[in-house]
Length: 598
Image 1 (tube, rainbow, N blue to C red):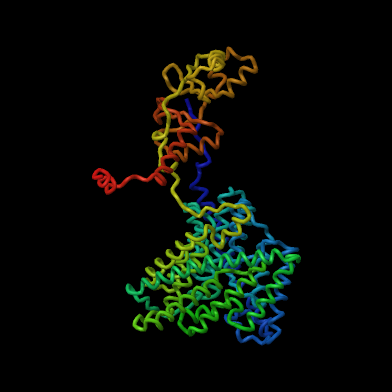
Image 2 (image 1 turned 180 degrees about the horizontal axis):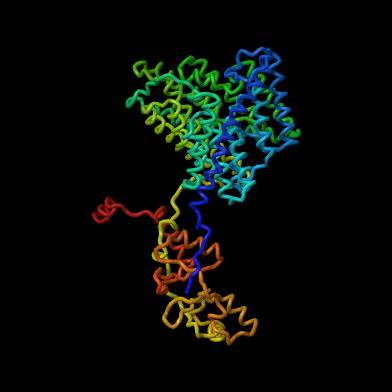
């Protein structure tokens, strides 16, 4: 007897290869999109602030020529973005990453084509008129949109389209910061929520090709050029711990303030298209006080990372950059969150080191090293993409001594943030919309458990010579042996599985009056089966694919002897075992020892 065992898992290796091939052009396009967006931002910034035609991105807008016209320029940019959000697509609002997460969680990774066009344009206008944003989040969203569009043009599954979307997002981040490893990890931690070959391989291909495009068009090297740093190990570790705690508190505080400002704008009795213009007015006021907060601010970050700013400047940038970001991005305009939070984290780290040196001159802490760690720790705590930003900062410094303080501070910052707030700055908006985002990673117990470890004993079986009438009469008589069984394996004269009869098969035969029909004629002759040595994950795929509630378990040899039955209830026992491992506490040997003594 040939048993049916085909599942959608077959051919998985080819699908990995196929999606990996698709990720290559996505990576190239993602790299090109990042380059074009920076050129577009440079064009708008130079035209607005310096009245010249140039595609070169100004790293610092503090020497602008606008004077008091600065009060109106960000408002005008905000008004244009507001109009684009109202009449184009509302998806351009915000910093981009939550919108990509929303597409993954609620729309089967489908992104509208207009997002790929309007998001970078709105960002170029927003930053080009002084917005204190980075281009990273929008580039991640644009790259994700490109990946999603590929997945909508070609026949793929929703999960494969998610991988293509994440590949585009990783390509955008890799091409922006020249940090391909952290870009891959970032996409895994914030978009995929899985670590599998089907996702990891395409991500690496896409990020690698995006970096290649970046190197060809822009040149080698990281976005922030930093001098060698002295991390002061091991004696400085306690002070990095202090910085981590401050970054964790700062991340939660900023996130709550950010969403509070959003709520205040939502209460305004005005059409949302006016909100970015109002935020632009506030930004213009802040820009007059501290012009270094305007624009992407990469030069400011570089200056902090190279210990070029004094304590007063660091506090000024930290305070006014925070206010500028809260007012402008909280108004619903379009812009990235990474670069401004990097500025804030770096300023906080540098300021902490300088203050500690003033209080304890013998410490000789490096403000540059603390700035680097603070930059990573603040955003790690805010986003909960902790591992990604540990690697991110390491890729920038290329200094192995940075690993210990980065790990220590980022983990402590994240732990503080997790203790205080359930949601990150990325997931808070989604949670308010009723979406659940689980960023935990764990091994599926179904993949670790074999069928033979979970199957039930051989149930009541039928001989292929039995009739439908015989089994129907026993069911009608409420035979306790059959009361809980939904399907009945059929054995031939040699005891081998030859078919299966479900209660539905019995009901159909009774309705047609085929009571004399043999059970093998009324049932299914090629049953879907499981094997003792296959995983519960594969067996569950068979159940779902063939829409059956249980699987007879047979030996793989030619004899085909039935050895048990796999049901949904028996599979849940495996899940119960994992639950008990996680939540049932076992008394340790010290407890047993003192317990006996008592």
